[in-house]
Length: 334
Image 1 (spheres, rainbow, N blue to C red):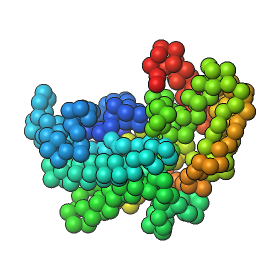
Image 2: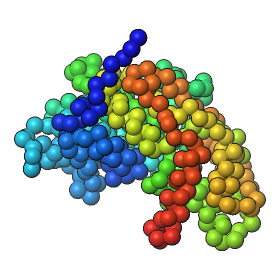
Image 3: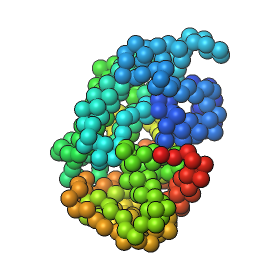
Image 4: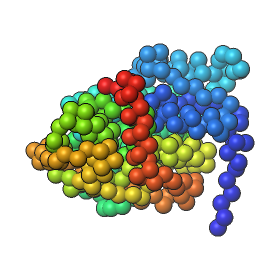
């Protein structure tokens, strides 16, 4: 059966969109994608002005976005909620309460107030961390509730998963059009390279380049290297989010992934090779591995709104390393 998709430029031409987290890693690519589609207006709230944990700030954001130059007092058409408190295994272990509360309260308040304000559509970005620790591979959306998430990031994963519950409840009771997406681990230029809060790929890139600069002969890596992960280039993820916002109108959760799975051991070896680190890799098995495997079933995204990732993993990794090297040369890194 052929599916007819409306022309993207025509769809976005008159749309005003709020992108929370739009100045961040993934958000910057979503904003870029919306602008390339010709969206009428893309509003990027900054946390210093609108703290989304504060209910009054959320209400003020929605009110401000409906007034001002070229606005007539009507609500924005779409809210894409990407703002989150995130980090790797270490950050999740050290700040579980903050990761739970901040993500839960931001999402819950923003969805509720968007509904109350008359926003036409709400797009929520969840996380692959919401899946049970031992989910059959590839992860299918129907398995989301078949167990407890991996312990080190469960508070974050569960807080984000509550947006799915809220989305489905509001559609059932109010007929509200909200959708819930589950991006796999992301990587790419503009990522967070702070070792206190970064995820595995930027952390390893920085670690390799730091080791090269320090002329170190070995590098210590957490765990034993056995877990596997799937990674999605941020620009691909942005395309998937924008396609879903444009074409998908159901509260059934949808995975966004690349269908490419790699072990942490192989990942470390590739990053060492691409950065030029030739020293010994030492595995610290006293540190946690995290979830044993992560690979998504991505068929629903392709069937429902025509999304498939396009960027080859090695090519995306090289572009990420190139971007970060440039930041280091300019002194714009931690």
